[in-house]
Image 1 (cartoon, one colour):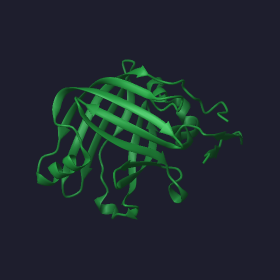
Image 2 (cartoon, helix red, strand yellow):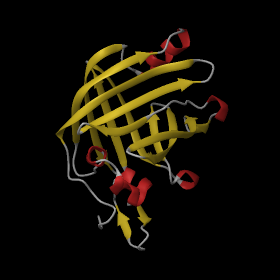
Image 3 (spheres, helix red, strand yellow):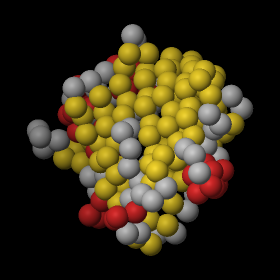
Length: 205
């Protein structure tokens, strides 16, 4: 189904990238590498390296194992692929041969201004907030099998994307109340395959 949102000029942009739909004209102010990786024109493949830190404790171990998060490492090779179809983006992350995937889509109804990321049966509604040259991901709610979960158990962490020395930079932290840090990973990527950069200032009809 085609998605659309209203620009300030009153024009409609249909079938725009998810991040463009959420951010509107702010998308054009993102660093170039962020615009590239969130482009909808064809598949994406990026590679680089990262540092990974897993949380300690039995419950943290259960969660990282359940979701397939990578092992702790100071310098692990990373490959990130992105495919987009029918308003859903599939993100596959390979940390030294350890692979895990999530999907991202535009929220519906009261969550229409949010990005929905799904880890198996768990989905998290995220606000995209630009501060300086960083794009932050702020959790606003979560569900399991479509059922809302208590807000006081909502995962948190300082997660953002930016550009560093011409490279795409990601910083992800996932912490859960009563458990603490589950996993944190930070790294740099450069494009292997990337589509054209769309713009909120032109029609994508």
